[in-house]
Image (tube, rainbow, N blue to C red):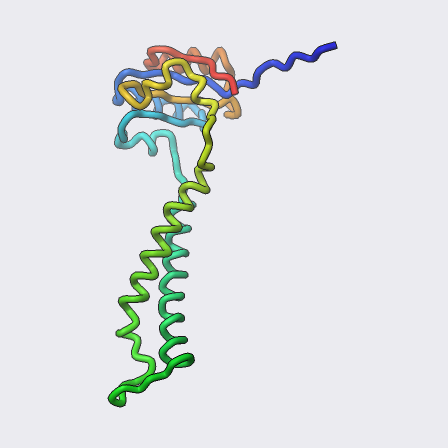
Length: 181
């Protein structure tokens, strides 16, 4: 006896030819109660992330805290060197004169923040990821050229294949494709 597994459904992907139509459709789709949305376009569309209520603050907070760690490490390193490890009093100046520590601490802040931005973005996005289900969408290669796509994932609580497909067509989609995982 052979068990044949039916392919799992990723969701429905609607194709649009105009960014304004995509933006309007994204707003209407979110207002209709769909929450597991994603949009794809060849260039940034102003207001699209707000239309699908995309909020992700992991990378900015990571950069902020790593910047704080960088400034702390910069000051700590210089305090250790100039006060504990190799104290050198030249001309009766104070051992811990914080204004001279600012340039190195600033550079450490920038270094830690920049590296955390790059590696945090890669880690949070799950890169490198050579395969993504959205790539199964017909004509999805045009998302980097001149087409715009709106995906409604099957994990959305309001997702119903027939109703969602009809809704996406009603908001102006040129085509709606069923995408398997």
